[in-house]
Image 1 (cartoon, rainbow, N blue to C red):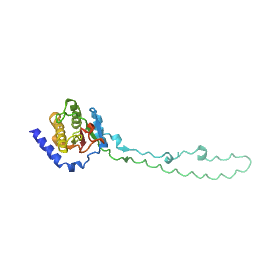
Image 2: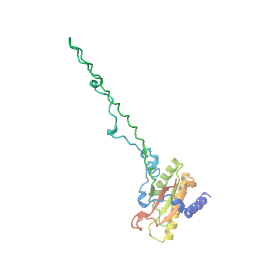
Image 3: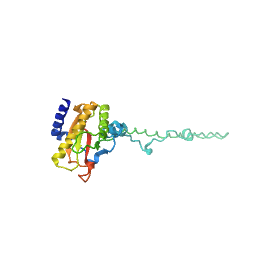
Image 4: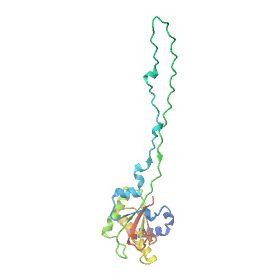
Length: 230
């Protein structure tokens, strides 16, 4: 029953996804392709970049020439020295009172922190070597999917779109169907093996419409991508 519900969910998502895709299908140059399963922290830094607080703020310090001058004056300038009396000569007139130095200008207020633009979440792509015309995840491809599942378990607010992509070998219809089946297989693995709620997953097949390289027949275009949708 769960397989049926998710299959129906996936087909509806693929049919109704244009509005959802406006939230950000990345250009090819925004995709990080991994040949081996990345670490959890690598994955988090790409898909949830705001989790690194050090990247979100920039501190502006005042320039050196704006710092206030010291208010301490030389001792000789603070207290006038009276001339020594000479007897029996008449006492000289007292020296004119020294005009006090003007008070230093108040120190400028520290510059406020400036908010930097929020970092943009990236898209992760894995080369899962499915067998020809197969949507069964191979043993050496499970580590990729399980790493995505680990991130979703650690970040319960994270929802993702799973995209299947092919090269240009074969017809448009064939590649579109194959890419949908492979993306759905990945979603089912996340639900059935890692306990991820199907409500946090959207599935779409892209076929051969978004190649990564200039050569659409390049095997590098065969991949599964994961994009954050919230």
